[in-house]
Image (cartoon, rainbow, N blue to C red; front, side):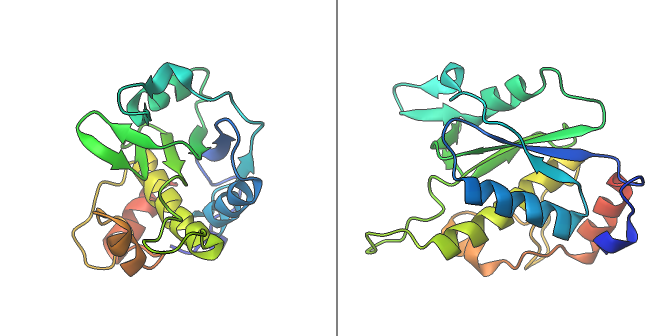
Length: 187
C-alpha cells in the first residue's frame, strides 16, 4: 500500500496517540510520524492521560492492557482510532507480558516501551533499537485496531512475535495480503 496514494480526505481514520502518564515525548513523535509514513494515517500526539491506575494488577505489578482498551472506547469519535503509549509494564491475565494489545477492528490499541529497550548484559537502553521496536509494535497493533488479524507469512509485520528476537527479525513491512487488507480497511 502506498500511503501517498491516499489523500487525507480518503482516509477513514485519524489516529490519536495518547501518552499514558509520563511517556517519552520522542517516542510519541516517532510513533506518530511512522503511522503517517507507513499507513498514510493522520496521527497526532494528544495531551497525556493519567496513569491508568484502574488497570493496575498489584500482585503482578503490571497493568492489564485489556482494561486500558476498554477505557479508550469512552468518547471515541466514529472516525477516530486511539493508540495508547506507555512506559508501564503491560500484561493480559493469560500472558506474562505483552509489548502491545489491540482489539481487532475495535479502533483502540496500546503499546508499551517497558520491555522494548531491555538487552541482556547491557545496563543502558539502546534508544535507537527501542524506537525501531516501538515502530514495529505500533504499526502491528494499529493494523489490528483497523481489523487485520495475525498473519502466518514469514517476515510479515502482522506475524505474532514471541519475544524481542522475533520482533527484531521482522522488517517494518506488511506482506501483500496484509497490505491489501489494510488498503480495504483504510478506504
